[in-house]
Image 1: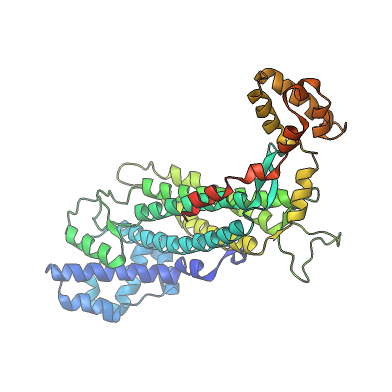
Image 2: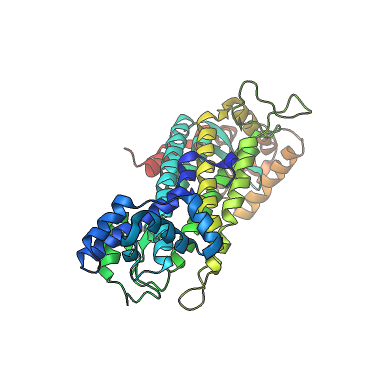
Length: 432
């Protein structure tokens, strides 16, 4: 991922030096287990820890000849360990190191992403509670529907990211597995206890049945989860983009002092952060299909998955980390305009109360079909500029035959639509 969209802690997980350090740890822990089993001398295992060192530049240089990254790594390691290096990698295959390392990297990346989601949840909860009763228009198909509150909007996103957190916890558990099982996963040349030891030391679970590799359904599930989280990011970003439109302007991104919106038009305040988030979300979701296609490999393994994972591992996690952090900042500083929300809500002249009038008429004895027709007649007349909705209803003899003026007026009460807001908040936040 390019530096523009990279945050240092996440990017560091994928640096070559870090990857080779993890490889070295895996090999050293395996040597400890082999020594404990009497397969290699204990002095050799100690030498790996004491003298073991790897250099990314040197490994790259060796790989130009070997055309094999793990062999280049082992060659560089042997240059530092000396004769005892012959006991390293006993009974192991390259994927034992590669896949176990990848699991460590994805688990560590997950921990950062979980912290990102926790921060976002905190921001969403704070702003949702702040605007719990801030009335605004609910919209379906982009058209005014019935009143809701801005707090409920944000609470919905809070609940969604709670689900995303649960999904990521499960995906992390699925991906954090270790395989030190040899060329085709049969442990023919290495004891399963070595795998168990390495797994415990690296904070992983043992892969129950591996081939030459860890099954890729685990990875597919992991990247699919990142894709779902990206979808949630875009859904929230899209809401901000819609609300910031000049015709709506119910909320907008914070505009920094000295910030410029356009090279040509000085008046512009564009939703650049949420548009950027939309693009990043597309990028992360685009990596899901290649991960799914990696599931089906030839027999015990082929190499077609390798290039895919070298790209999507770092790029998906780095991009999502950046996006979650950016979204958190956007929500924390989001400018909200309750007065504009109320004005927009009222611009329809009360049309948003149409369902309540419909229900009142049916409860007063009118058939639903007749009630719908009467309310729609008044609504369409008001919608086309023929006056206020309530006045059109008052002029309808069929309506007034069922409802008196006082009852009709009571149906236009804003508070009716917010009477269960507290209950919804309690349900989501689980508070008394």
